[in-house]
Image (cartoon, rainbow, N blue to C red; front, side, top):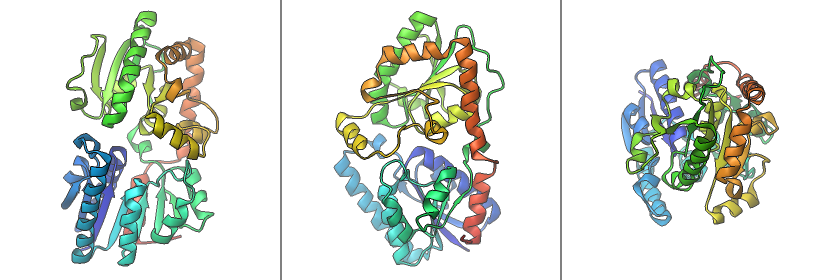
Length: 361
């Protein structure tokens, strides 16, 4: 019986890794999966180490997070030494996973990286460090394969898992009054910064368009203590029928913006960090845009309102402009063109086959 260790450190990565684990078990039912991540991975692993996805939800301070993750690393080392792990699969979350990868490499355990850290956005030098410890990179954006291969890393573009999960809308007629999707984010600190801006923007749009709103969340418990106006209803982010009912969205960059693009939903992307983190990231960022849709397109398809531009009136004005009928039809077609970049379906199946076969190049 083969043994595979898997790890994810954030919610979106965990969901993709969970689907990969399911596919691996479908192909090789006898495989024993030992993992760490969050609730989704816990449900599919034969053994579960601990929850590292919801560290922020626990209210840990950064220094406590460090000590917590050090404790987790000790547990992982013990598992590697005692259970004779055959393969390790890591998803994104570079800072922690590079340490796990080095540990595995030191014990001659092959490491597969499914979903690359976004090294192309800021720290391109990290590729050299990954090169030393990773057997194969299974990447989900087409430009990443060349980026890694040019630097001597065995990498393959398997496709994006969301192509199988997210089907585009069928109806692109604007609802009267329009329905606007609100996505504050999934992490506690992100929601805290985004929610006041989003609620003020919604208030302006209610006055100007008499719009209706749906607030999407990863779980309803995120808003247990929130007091929303009656014109905002709540829905789970994975309620795809409700997602397809919205005409336009206000959302952060990241997975949710890509999901909306694959659905064909125009949007305004907003993101706000602490000022310290903003200026630090601004100093090291190497890409012109922060939204993957714009990065893939090589131009601004989706308007971005970052940090000091994340101002309610400014965002509201842009939403109104995008909802003008001709603008709206042009925008939906432009956004849907992104689907073609990702090729065919079956990304998770291709990744599972490569990992189980152990093939390289």
